Length: 142
Image (cartoon, rainbow, N blue to C red; front, top):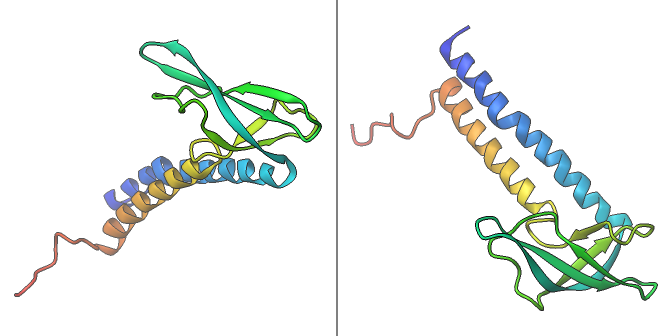
């Protein structure tokens, strides 16, 4: 096995496999939006976890059955969301406390972005080692 092939296999493990896993998770998150109920919610507070860690935002929304629900995020943010900020919330029809906030951090878009960047990194190194493609090796002007 050549050094190039070994490096490519290492980058396969470092980039492609996690990218695939992140893409699957993001797709599952996005699929929930099709079967869950979409309502408008508002950030009502940010609970302090600790001075160094950050804040856990709490969103309040009203279900279609006119039940008011407050859900605190499991994610710790630094800084937290602005109080009064409004965003869409998807909730499970049978379990309204199970939610998906329609924000870049929570709705799967961030996972897709990370997966895309990992695949780009893999393709860069794959093309460099297998096709000897390099911007540094070009001889411009002879």
